[in-house]
Picture 1 (cartoon, rainbow, N blue to C red):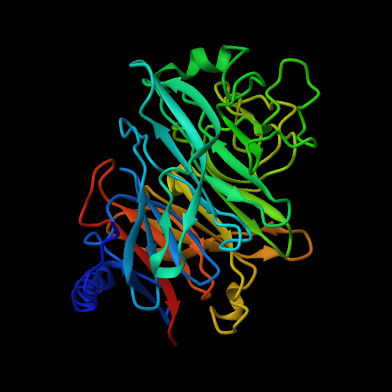
Picture 2: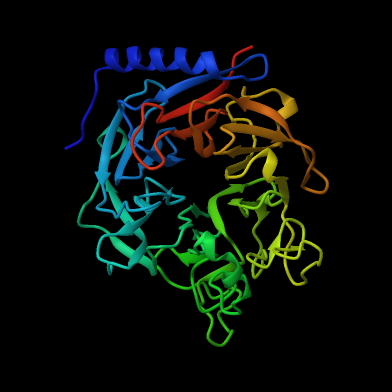
Length: 406
């Protein structure tokens, strides 16, 4: 059964959290951060997406899925998924069908519990939502598995980002390369390493039909021995996808390597592209020699050095709400990206002629916990999920939005 909280209790808790957040956070003049749902409502939040009615659908790592109305902060649990939460696993990505709620499908990325002891099993599944608005619930009998793959329990980087493309009517999925950081040299030298192999779904962006089918125009459907679902390869920890309708860009926020001079990246996703991992770091340098360029890869669309941030978890291009208002014109068409380790969000202008970003500047600094998701809401505000437990519930878990209040 869904649970509800009294509006009075929610308002009091939100005000307390807002005061605490306000004391720490630094934003440009005229901006403010508002807590939409704090730890008393959501536990270990991971990702969110928006329905046409403006409600945010939020995943929790332990398997909960919530619907939150940003207007009054009312929250109810619409369902729960049994998921493996060992290591960095659990429930992660969420996407709604582009025609939702007319087509009442919801997509989730999580780790199933039916796996061997030494393995994990990643699953992308489609569910049916029954009821609308505050009465919406997942039909527990409606789950349809679209894609599954096994990985090594000892490895890191599981991905789990989802994008339901609004015009292609296809689902994009990120998968981590599942390597152990301590074995990077061995992994890099292996010609069959998971991120580069077309026979392995790990270290990829997949492109899948809403029914689990392989799209006929996927780039490797006619390559002998290749997995037809693969759309791009050469990824380490591809975290979150976003789509910019005016330009058609699909952007991927991705964690780079762990060495001091590595880079974190925002990649522009293109059919068949190879983004280089683990052979390449940054703009083409050999991962280990640091002296030789590596051919046959796609350069990052945007990157920044590890000494200024080392875990890019969200990247969106800001567009004002169709209803008007939103952020000042300076930010229209700009890239915003979030970094978990630096507990920050930065912005960078994007040249409208070339679609290339320029130098970034500080936007949000001083969060009490690292952001795990950055999304543009239909109200023209940027929404941030913070997760303070890594990996466990924390009093710093929250869904917040950054609003312009001149």
